[in-house]
Every structure is written in structure tokens, then in C-alpha cells.
Length: 252
Image (tube, helix red, strand yellow):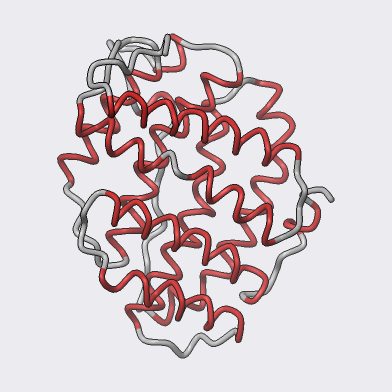
């Protein structure tokens, strides 16, 4: 099965599994970092049920979490592409923008029910300069560009969704992780500080999100398999480095 099954999603019910995967990811990272995420577990289950039933008459806090998750995913893809090689951008620009439009449409009634939820703006390479140059200047090839893009944008995605869901995420940690990770994955820094490495180790659990979406929508997608393997390998590498502090150089 191809991505056509996923691109056929239109109604809130179609995006229920998508929301659940995103809420589960947010909860997993928040709990792993020790953030107070008491409301997220209920929001994951209640939001999923509301989307399945296409109910928009939900409490504002729940509506905000649903809208923030879907809008985060809608806005994730387009800025991700400029970090990647030209051939990858050319192949995925159309599907990514179509998925973004569908996700925004599914999120709209929940954003309205919450009294308005901001759409996040995620970084492009020129927004995260390292020594005066985009971090992409120091890396080439799909693997390294993909990890660089994800290391920056999933920090911003998590901060957006978690904060809208009521989780107190330290702004200083988010800002430093974004900046240091751009330098590290851009080949301009040899190691990650322990707290940043720990944060990224949890954030790179987005391999589970990829697997969850692929399984839930029965995609059997080769592309999703590549994403999952790439993310899982990096998460496992960071886990090994966490157990051996100072051993997080890219040669591991």
C-alpha cells in the first residue's frame, strides 16, 4: 500500500489515529523528561474518542490539545523539506503540502472550540545559523540531512504541542537544545551536553510515531520504514552515549 491511503484522509475521524500517535509521542517525551503531564494522558484518550465520533463540542482545554497536535503536524512538513536533498524535496513537496492542508482543515473546528490556537512556525536552515552559515552547509546526503532537520524541528514541535497541552517545558532548555543540536548535527560540534543529549534521546523516539502511523493506516510504506530505521538508530546511539557520557561523537 502507498501513501495514497494516508492522503485520502479528509474528516476528523480519519485523523483520529494520527492524533493519538502524536499525543502518545508528546506524553512519552514529557514523562521521560520528568515534566508534569498529568492532563496529557486523558487528553490522548478523550481527544481520540472525540475525533472518532467527529465531536467538536469538547472542553476548550481538550480542543486546544487536539488542534495543537494536528496543526503541529500540518506545519512540520513544509519547513522540513528545505533541510533535505533536492531529490527528496522534489518527490515529497506535493504530498507534504496536500497533507498539511488536510490536517489544517481537520484542526480548524477544534481550534475554534478552543477560542483560537496558533499555528507554529518551524525553522528553516537560514533561521538557525551556525558560525554565520546554515547548518546544512556542513552536511550532505539524505541520512545526515534528515537527522539534522529532525533534531531541530522535533524540538520545536514538542515545545509547541506540549505547551498548548498545559505542560511546562523550560524555554531555556528548548532554545539551547535547538541551537546546540543544529551545530552538532550540522557537523560543527563534537558532543552534546548531557541535558541536551537526554532531551534528544527522548525526542528521537519519533521512530515510534512513524511506526504507529504506518501500522494504524496500513500503509506498508517503504518511505516510512526508512524514516523509522533512521530515527531508531539515532535514538539507540544516543541511549548508548547517555550510558557512557562523553561518547556521543558521530563516529559511534
